Image (cartoon, rainbow, N blue to C red; front, side, top):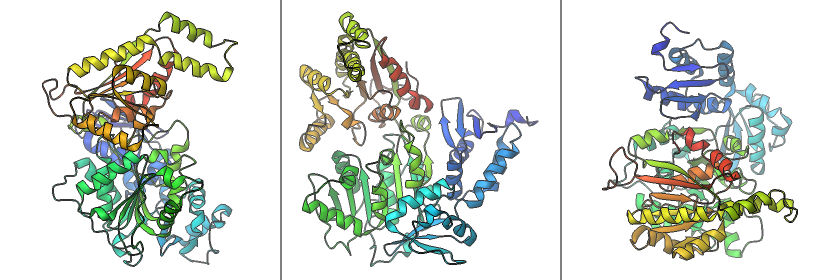
Length: 581
């Protein structure tokens, strides 16, 4: 222990775990430092936990933070004497991080470094050498990479703990290959302080854009951050998102926030296919979905022509919305099939139930910025949500069937879990509770979203209550009509959504969620659904500053496996400081 340990805010463990007392007088400045050099593990109200990892150090050094500066600040803030072995680990990471760059120039990829011995060491690896167009010349600082093998090169460098930086000097790019984009933010657009901080991490050096990931809560304005980045880079931009509804929302937000002419905003979906006119000389923003670019089957002639355009052009910026879905095997090739100088990933939930989330650090880049959910709530940028888990007893008949299904010889083994899930979802007591909550909040004048992954219950329950529903079988036109009526009409106060509404749907008027069926223990889905009501709410007679103005109900069947899944689903939000009652 340091003699003045009581005045110091953190404890640094031998394994890089950091315990942070948030009641320290300089807590805000300490938190900014910790989020820059480490990964947040848990951030409730009083004590936060962070973890310094190789990836977090890569991100810190890429953002221009010197290794010795990190060590100096850790020693200054720590209550205990920081372990020397851990400090040596930090120094070792600093020797190679930030010194290797992957550059796109005239449609060709190059690997370069000012440290010729380090570049030679990397290229001596067999997996790396297989990705090169030619052998690295002696004492050379640059070598060409096969553009079809960029993903393999990134993975090989990551496995050697020699991460590659992707940076873009956008002011120096040539007009003939990447023309200037005539887009600036409108004078009335205001960037919130945390949005400005996120952008400052991406553009920490003037006229240089860094590839990486920005993590902001749902409803905190990730779309505006992406649009502002497109305007700052000022070159062709390609935006990828998850659904056609999200594509339309991006299009409308670009037209709302920027001066870009509508004819320079292109959308590529199953229903909208407009080729880029005069593609070689036109600066534009194209918005599409992962599935449109990642689909490997046969395509129509119009679609294939547009995709060929996208792959042939150079893009100044690739914006990857809901970036947590990109590591999926069907989508990950999208990041390398597009020739982009820089890539910005946006997400609220940098979590997956598999181990693929770590792949984003080499597919996209390091985490540039992550906001604190509770801090944004306290500052009024997010709604104050009350999270409630409602336990419902199973009816006698349903509970009997549930218990018998576990080992019934009449039910195939592969179907037992499915049958049990259907029984706890269709529990009559649960559905009655849901109906009560809907009617109670409708009488208050609230706007309610009911989530159900079970499509049968979704449709049947919505029809019985006379409410609209949206699922995969509802076409795009009808979806937009339902969402518009929910937003604007007092006659439509409740809608039922399947998992198609989990993300990338903007419904700022919604302030109540009732969840009756979910995808097992998915932490990401829980956070995304909460995010549908996180937009800041106007003050009403039912709310005042410091009081709850949004409600998230998770209705579960007692004494079933659903309780176990519900507990796991809540872990991410609990780590962000939310409490379930």
